[in-house]
Image (cartoon, rainbow, N blue to C red; front, side, top):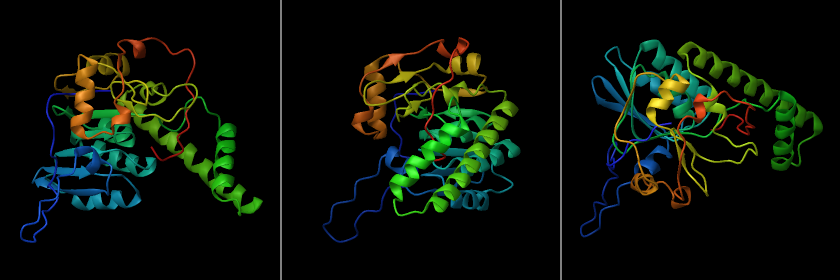
Length: 289
């Protein structure tokens, strides 16, 4: 995963000031807040679209409606969202040969699918690309079925056994389809799926894993851009200066508005992804990344 440092971004328009006389302007939202908000897409110029916010089924239609024959670059600021719609958008980016540029944050499904699908992948100064896992990995379909069962019975205790089993069947079908689609995409791109599966720990702890590693309550990890290319096969990355100290890492996260609980500590991972994997990881994602 990648990190480029040293600048704060104000991607897109600022929030409108209160127009009442004497009122103080509303504070501008941070890149993180916009990346984690409602999905929006609009043109920055004739060749460039800005896409911000969480990805869901409606995002695909909005993205396709905004595309024109002149579109050449997609600027990304998104913390991700649902897997299938993100892959739909990634396939459109790939089919059109579009470049992508991260300004702010490209996390989770944005990183897993949209970022890697770009022809040239630009990471602007101060921007972050983040992973935190994907459907698949070491979890078998039977194990995932039991996880779905536990989640459904906990959230819908009134559901009948028939309803529970039907919901599980639909969820497993979606889960298997997502795995097949993401692995097809990665094979086509010549990228190792280790970046999807090995950033999670074996206990399945939910964490945010940066392009260059992982961030959770206790530590952060990052991987240099050249390792992403040399060891994982992610080509055509154009990145700015990367962090060289834990302080630089924490500063970048803070400038983007990432919650403080995700900024504690940092360690460097260099050639971990260049070493053959011994045991695939345990993953808990079920489609919402």
